[in-house]
Image (cartoon, rainbow, N blue to C red; front, side, top):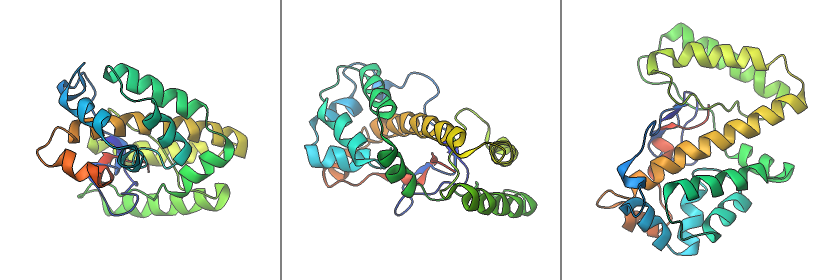
Length: 212
């Protein structure tokens, strides 16, 4: 999960990549290996279905269209490179579109009540100042550290001006998209993953890799 503590699914929660945005595949995933079934199934999706599931990785339609259009990908590295290129090429309107679809994430069950209260207040303050949800990819951070890492990040970034924060947010969205892509190709290896993806459904929004 790219642990996204406050992030929950875009629409209905999909998997577990959203809460703290710090999860996801930290090492090589067999499903993403050259010729792996997850990537092969992604390459085989219709253009419409591919764009639909990609929107669960990044809410910019232009980003999803570009990544879908460059299929087939020979390996996971090529997919990641294309996703990064599309992320770096987002215009401000594309970024705003993606941010509008990033909901506040939820911390994992069992988080201390005091931490939840502090995070709610910090999120509200952040959104009042910048006008969008706080986004961060805590990929690799243990679940028990998510609350403290998230709160510290919000407080630190509250001191930035709008342009500085916009640049950081864009890079965090790029990192989140990478983590969610790993989840997507892995999910497509499941028995019902391919058939569900054909209809544009993806469970990524229940996953801990979602933005905060």
